Length: 441
Image (tube, rainbow, N blue to C red; front, side):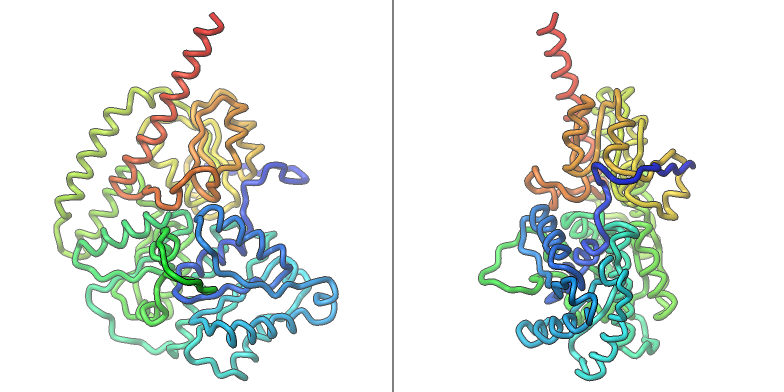
């Protein structure tokens, strides 16, 4: 394993998405929740705009709208006013206060102010949590994971941290930030098919899946209800998808005695086999026939596509967990890598055998000369065109394709969809190159 970092004074074509957006995304998977970004109005507008364009759904988020004089004199006064307004007007079940680089750099003790506020208001039915997510550290993935951990800490505080008798055959699911709404729904259905009851935190499959509901609500209109989320502490097992979700899973184990198992991904033949084998062993139930047929379909699809993947090279630029998941299924198809670029460094990347760059999409373009396939979010499309690589949009945000949030990427069926999707792009690229050579000839 080799991790390289670019030594540049600025990021000219950013790959990294700020941590506060990851925190907002995590809270979208909790029913009747309200994120409050403690920072300038632009911080909230940026997160809301990107999330709305990607999911094509209204996104619940508020801001303390700090200005220069607020930061100098009393930034936390705005926070208390925002909390009072949200509680009075909307009465949410969950409020997540998310710091930004502005509040962190100013040294404001917002966490202490929140503790005082909670004692004064004696909040019993509302879960109020804080999370330190400055933009100058980490990325979307780390912000998402930190917010999930803060929610678990809040649930532990509400329940008094008392040991509880576990509910038999009840399982927690902690899905990573790189999973789509369709992925979370597929994982829930897969686990339930083994006779297990599943509680997902967060659950974007019921909040960001494109449903139609009448009326308007400023709060999230789907996700796991708070009453169900409290039952996380009584489960027999936690299944975490993505290395970034190991910290929240470990928090549950240390505080509530719930053991956990981490899967770095559930995409690819090997990763899917490991997931299904584990569920079979844990539940004592055989793998349902539909998944056995899906495995046969995947094997046949891999055989059908292998000529189109033969000798292909790729450049991949994604969040760390998503990068590892993508590398797994591409390697199974025999794809070589000209460049792997991640938004930030994590322990999971240090365990990988491949050479990985911590950088931006400009670095991906520098590495992509002669590559056949380019995988990144929508911001990498122009770079792929300049390099002549087939472009496949993955990750966040995907702005110019419909249904990205409902594309399936996990399990045997999701892996087959990815193989066909990338394979079709390689076929189109080869056809276009042939057409150009005939015209010029």
